[in-house]
Length: 523
Image 1: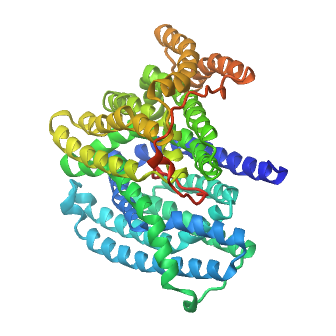
Image 2: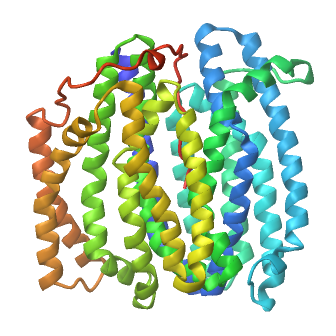
Image 3: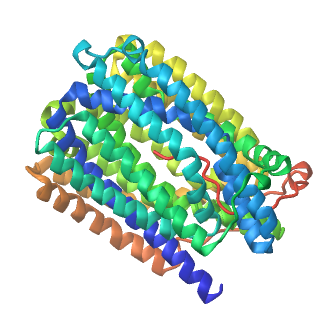
């Protein structure tokens, strides 16, 4: 690998981890601060409105992934004319989508009080909040072209550093204004305004590094057709992601109350942080598997599949153990003891199937990389539908835990029954061999950590954040020693060549290399 490529990878990965760390730290600090200033009901409305507008992401139609793909392709080939046509067609399409979403926002804002159980005295705030957030999302569609261009140019570090700056500034402004008595609408203006400013800044940067002429004459049908064709399957995955992970707040808001959303969100938020931690690493397996497929190197593809999932398991298994054993202390110290009876069961119910999914994070990326993610898209869509139906059925009797079970059961079935068998069919790695090679080492290394955490939890109760951090740090220190030994001895990447022959129909696929596609929606 060239020195420039190594430097680029380090800059992208390092900035990605930095952005994730800042988001987690700010989220841990800011969530309890906001909920204690605004109250449970207002905080629940906050989450509900962002969940509603989050569905506007469906209007993306897979365009973002096509921007990444074709910007990378046309800059690599030096075809500036096609690049200009594609960028302008994307801007035009996104602008039209933004206008449609703004009309929908206006209509929904007058119905929000009727659709959800919102306290009467907060109805006007919910109306204004939906207008503000919906308008920012609508404007974010055309502005999002700049972020897609940066990803296509492999300038992830620009995205990440601008995101870090906006996140830190947002936290500071929210604390400042809430301490001076301002309320929900002010917090919303700060939260949605800074990302817009960041997108404008990214646009200025991207057009300096990659000048593209703008004008209606560059809009063409061929670019739109390429955009629609490439983004079609990705759009199906996006729909599935919304049904799988973004229906909980809507179900609770329509069947229970905004307070129930608050209780659910704290347990689910912790799981989201764990998911982001693993997913930020797993995205590198898309281009690696794509390259292996393009070169016809099936053995390397199998190694990416097994070693990639092993590394993901090495990350998520210790986190899962810590959250199950110490989760009550985490929630108590983070947001308060009164949330533990409601939020901790949600955390436990969700973290187990999510661990199954995250242990196989490389599997979905491999399927995207080799261009065989159609079956996965269909299965995850069915999973999302089952999630919604099961949640609606269980919430009346089990409340927030029933909603969590509605997500957990279909998710667990997908990654226990479908994913390993589907990868066996596609690349010929037997399920038993995959499980043994990918997960034996992570499970063995996690056992000492489990013992340490269990003993500390039995004989020591952390009273504050510092004690909790020290307790978790001591556990991870034990785990880190084992992980370092595994890395230094080469066991982390040691793979047996035990793949079975791949069926002929699975080999007859022509694949253009994919630069970057995320199969799971951002949290």
